Length: 275
Length: 299
Image (cartoon, rainbow over all chains, first blue to last red; front, side):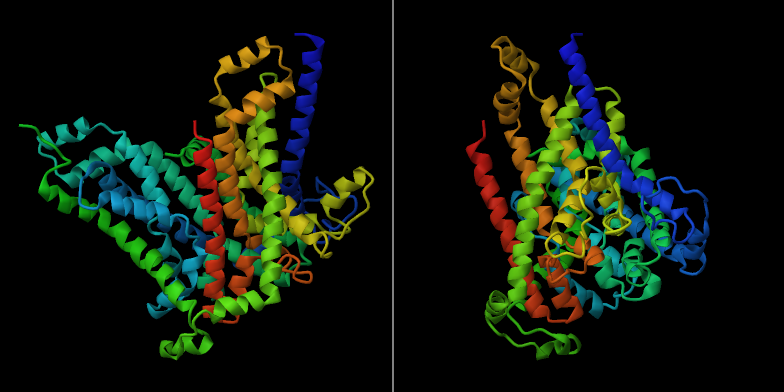
């Protein structure tokens, strides 16, 4: 390797290292502050490793501010949306991929072109509708608009199309009915895309803010992002406690991501491939 | 005899059965509200209509016209335009730079870098906004501290109308660039090695290779990334909601934040619906322009 390349190598690594520090520093500071005694985070120069470590902010959050409850709310909502939408989207994706029925192309085109409509447009009437149904301030109110998604149907359809028809026909000759085929052949074969979709949906709903903020007006129903935004109002001085709250909100999603990152990164690629 | 799942008539009904749950949900909880919102935007639907819908009256285009006369609307439009026009190029450039650096054959620990650049993408936006609110603290924040290392005087990022929106943009770029980076990396991997070899044989330098090989080959990827980033930046909401509440002096008021306030704080829902359709219109126009562009550059 010549010296010009050697120099280039060092420069690239230095630049990448700067990038790494910039992306990681906020997280390191958050974790450090969350374990610092009250008031310690407000120092100049900032401290990245606390001198004394305390769990008091986590204790306050769980005992006085019942964060466990909000955590549970977030879990219930995210898991429900993920589970239900996975089933509904995969059923519809299967139908679009492997059946022939009147106006199939028209319906599919309608769905695809509707993807340009931002969700915010639906929120006002949706709120009134769910209000009439008595779903405001309930889990169902947050869950219902998420139980099916055009994008999800589209991605699953793309995957199922590539499953050979012969696999289905063979099962049919053996006397399998359509639901058996869906459940025992299509779903298992589609596992990679289903895991990817599940991951995207779970993370998306866990991080979602605007809709839960609108639907959940009662304190005990809040999800973690909503409660965090709310705490910001009264506890803006309690830096360390807010950081502990942020850790609790971010940590589960980071763990899920790290465990399944292969599927997540793969999903990004699927989404970016145009027809 | 051939069994064909695709063509038998009874299968049609089974297809409808599979379609039903998702289609019902999408039509009732998506298409219906879109139509309702359109109707609503032509009425004076407000807090009195909440209890008794018959109190809402048809007012024609007056919600749209009132919006056009409202300085707050123009402020929100202006802020959103600034957020998009400054934020999107910054974000796309950061993604491309990171992708190019990570794609270099000289680099080690690629997956470590890639992973750490990606962490902000998965982190909850609200929590990130909370963290950055403290990071931007004029006296104790680590942002001013880092700038101070380069001799830059402390700035009251979120308290000064001149800087607040830029501060939100910097945070948004930090949060999002890792996503497009992944797409760029894949785009780079799809460029055939032979093109680079040919360019090298012709004696092209690094910049020429980038300018005449890499960039043209990434046209599709770049235009896709620009569109999706544009659309998501048009909808920014949680950042100002958590960090500035639209202030100071409305310098970070966004279209969606204004829509949220009008609709769900003041319950001027007809008015708010009109605002939502302005947002829709903008996104539609951007998408159509991009589709044109895409067609023009198809190979």
